[in-house]
Image (cartoon, rainbow, N blue to C red; front, side, top):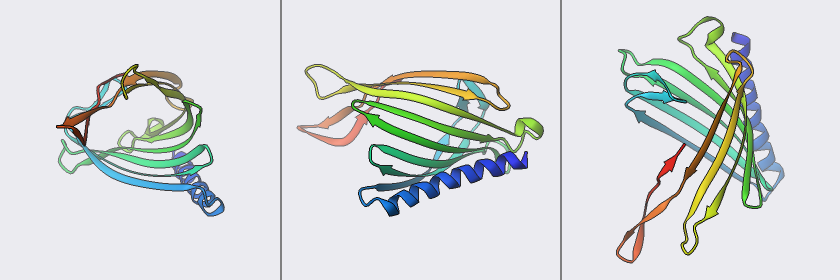
Length: 189
């Protein structure tokens, strides 16, 4: 188990270092980093209620654009604050490579899931994913519909597939004759 977690951390750090190295080698590259903390009243993952109470979910990620590709890595966590003491129930490590080919975006990556409360073999599992997406313009408007499909394969403890398709749009909220930087984003998955 410790070897799997160490491997996942090393893979994530290696992807981050490759991204930083690419920035140093290519003056046209664009580096990005972001972090945040989300609050949710429950933790629902792929239709499963994993935590039936309030959670705090901190995350951090970094990426670099190299030509048409973007290399990125991130770490995400889940704290069950419904329980006294705020138990850490999950830490995910992700590495991703995305590329735009004309109007289509392709991505592939690896996710390592660490469940520190589980113990034993169920404490860590990993998957790879492959995705495709793009925007279809809505005629006679400046709007579009974002379409996507992603296949996830847990080749470790979960030993199975998960498929997700989605459609969404972003509709600017006007204030008089100007937009105010807010939008309504309906979607289905």
